[in-house]
Amino acid sequence: MSVRYPKLVVALDVDSLDAALGLVDRLQALDVVFKVGYEALFGYGDELRRRLERAGAASFIDAKLHDIPRTVGAAVRALVRPGVEIISIHASGGNDMMVAAVEASAERAAELDIPPPKIFAVTILTSIAPEELLELGLHGGPGENVMRLAALARDARCDGVVLSPHEVRDLKAFFGDHFLALCPGIRPTGAAHGDQKRVATPRSAVEAGADYVVVGRPIVEAPDPLAAAESILDEIRSASVR
Image (cartoon, rainbow, N blue to C red; front, side, top):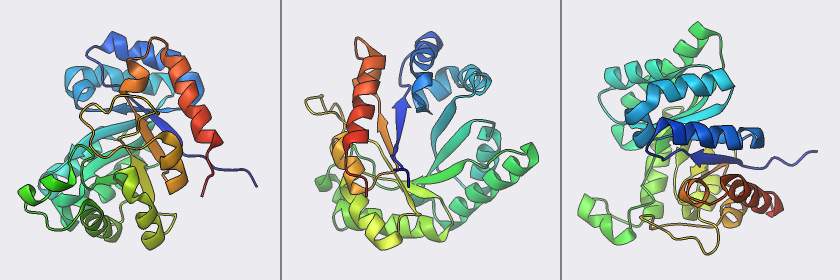
């Protein structure tokens, strides 16, 4: 039986369409997923999404939607298109909002006759330190809050959650391997953490059970982004997969 390794998601967090397309051209042959976050989505998102679709590249639209159910459902419909593999929403938006997103993804994909994008619910941002949770009115540690929000997302039929690599083992133990884990905050050994607080190496995220690992600056700011991405893929493939 072949081993199924997690997918590498490359965050296109760059300030211009040309820079983003340059990264896509360099990295597409590696079979990675390209994350379109706020900087790209609001700056040049329409054209980037068209070009990704034209190139047949897989994308993760990291919209982190959080609004009333009808608004989120309409936004998801607008984001569904060929090649979109994942769309993110906030678990803290509640059951009705998450259900609206899941249903909108399935309905719009059926209209287009394409596979529906997976809906992932963001739990606790990896930029939030444990001591900051109480300031937000959240009692308990990151793990407790992640599991509580993950349970809501599972009940709303989301495909998985966005969470720190540190909470993946507990997530998989409780919800099973079919409930997917997408992990930002991935930094190769020796890389600067930037504004991420709860980070892990690619190897440790894989060995915890992550299904998608997101890497941005260590690739996009590298002198040779292709070599940096290949190095991270080598680390992923050398890890012991659960």
